[in-house]
Image (spheres, rainbow, N blue to C red):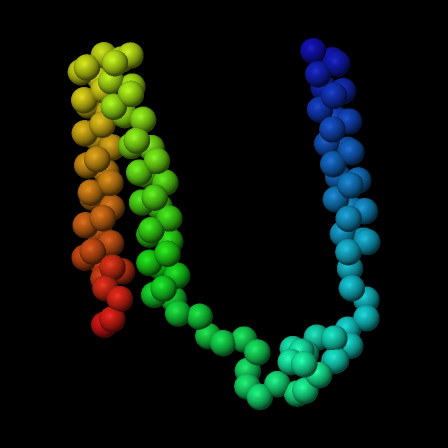
Length: 117
């Protein structure tokens, strides 16, 4: 038990030292106006370098990502059917699909799925 505490302490100490060294090395001390400005082939930029990002596009992409991960969780369900109890498999898959549909209906009623409003 004592060796486990020593290993935990050494690991914590080593990671803390590495984080401190990394933060000291990575600090930029010189902030030059030319280095922080956007670069367009040596000329001054015509417009703003950072254009506003559409929040609606971000929400659609996030919803797509969530449903994509849920589809990857649904794909092994038919394979698991043969190695599990049919009652527990049915209950688990129906519960998962109900939670998925409730999330979809919630996003639909909140208006997050409408691209143009």
